[in-house]
Image 1 (cartoon, rainbow, N blue to C red):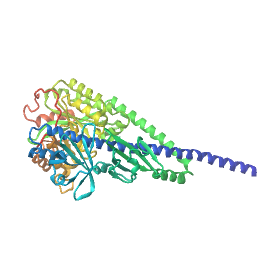
Image 2: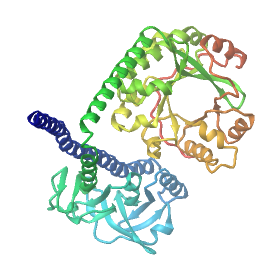
Image 3: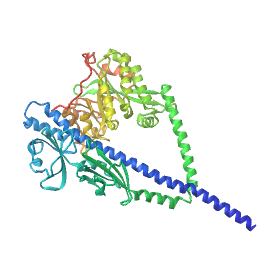
Image 4: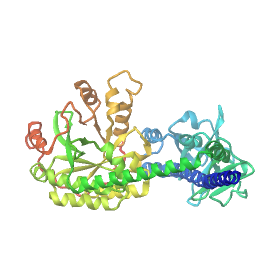
Length: 544
């Protein structure tokens, strides 16, 4: 009997040990995976920081191009005004200037440039750009600036402003000069050795500094005069793993089974949802409503925005904010976008042939902006409706502009089809003023959240005014979303906004309702065929 109990106890102990082994192994693998994932996160932050540095350098090229396009003296009143508007479009640049050697002849902010202390001799980049890396301003001794100069034009930038948008707990970051190893901007704990040209991190993208207990990502930004460092303490990862092992080891096997079961259920649910959306696309359960767009000057309907809906089999109508994110994750968004364009052809071909000047805008997802297939789909839509029938606008959110090179190529190809471009939801998420000067947008849409506060005492009530002024300075038209009251319509009309949409004018309409609505809210011949034009030119910012 005692032997049986001993065997039972031994089997129980063996079973417990075997149950713990997978948990211990998982804890070890979890630490390695946590390090890999943390490096990936640091890489992502470093990539954004590097992009900020490159964008700042490109601003100098843009300033030179705009100033060279003028025929008058750079220091004329118009030239100084242009430099001032240029600085207003950037959160990093503090002053633009025109120099003779090291002497500032004129600038957008004389109070700053009159007190410049340039410091050591500049570093000369291969393209001839001079970089003064330790510039200070009298009276602001605690701050250090960088001055970029080429062909007599200069930009004074505040490097700490480059890293501020990415600062977060447990992440240190900095910009350094590859020639001197000096920090140009820094946040959090940074070792001097990480910036040194012959330091342990030199020549490495990823570096584990076991002496200081930090994970380090180090990059050199082309052409090689500036580098970035992003670091995070290993202790946070070690602490998390040790807490897991200490508290959850006894329940590891059970937790593993629960997670496995949950993963199985989730995967089944995801596959089921994906199949359901595919079925909806193939069986014609997606449809479009059209939100009329009005001219605020004479209260006439000039166009409409196509809004996607899903008529579920249970009769419920699903809005895109509920299924578009899933379609993006499931790799189905290109099928959805193609279906939207097919529905525009199906719904509006006859109408647009009768009203060729009517504007129709469609929304594209961020993934569409990265796909070279998108311009071809739009060209097919135009061909199916008929040449010269309809004036089309493509709306893109800022979230779709993060991959700048591919997005710019797609947007330029779309614009080459004679289709205008609108930036949607500006100021609500990934806002960057550089987007408006980088991409060829024609229309800036003011989000309804700013529309609703424009006529109130809210702290955001002045945001709409600033967006309108910004769009005007860049030569862009403005369209206001979510207008619900006459007071709001009057507010924006008085500020020079030409177009608006919202429930004050109409709710979203079906295609047949739109056909009846437009003639009743239009002037005679308002939507006649516009004069033929070639591909739209690349839009450039224009002065007020």
